[in-house]
Length: 190
Image 1 (cartoon, rainbow, N blue to C red):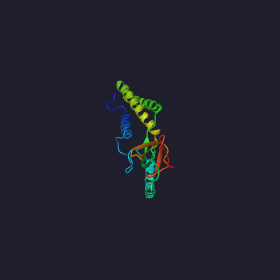
Image 2 (image 1 turned 180 degrees about the vertical axis):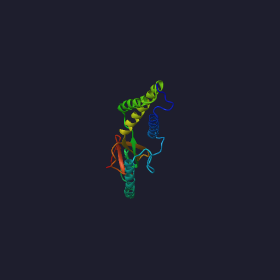
Image 3 (image 1 turned 135 degrees about the vertical axis):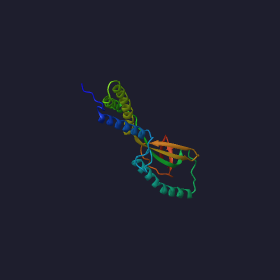
Image 4 (image 1 turned 60 degrees about the horizontal axis):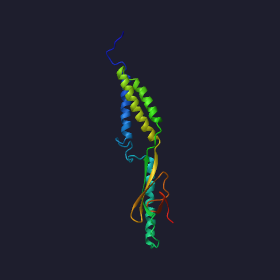
C-alpha cells in the first residue's frame, strides 16, 4: 500500500475552488450585489434597454414643441376623465417565470461536480452542497434567460392624478403627448 503525504489531487482542489469562486461571483451579479460589468451602463439595464431609453429621450424635444403649440391654442374641449399627458417612459428588464428545468439541471450538475471532491463524509457533504448550489444557480439562470423588456408609461391625468401603464410593446407615443388611458392601455386622444 502506497501512502502520500501531499494532496492527492491538487488540480481537483484548484478546480473546485474556481467553481466555488465563479458561483459566488455569479450569485452576487444575479442578485444585484455586484456593480454592472460595463462602466457607464445603467444597472439592471442592458444596452438594448439603454438604447430604447435614449430613443425615447430624443423624442422629448419634438413632443415638447408639439405641447407648446397646443397650449397656444385655446382649449375648448370638455374635461375628459381618461385623458392625460405622458410624463415618462421607462424601459426595464423583468425576470421570466422559471419552469424548474434549470433548477433540476443545475442540481444534477452541481451534485456531479460536488461528488468529485474529497472522500468519505466530505464527499457526501460536497455532493449535497454542490447540488443545492447548482439548483439555485440553475433556477436564477433560467429566470435571466427568460427575461423580457417592459415599458412603464407614467401619465399625468387632467384631474391631477398619475397613472402608470405597463406594457411589453414599445409605446407608439412620446413624452409630452396627449393620450387617453382606456382599460389599462394607452390610446391616441381624438
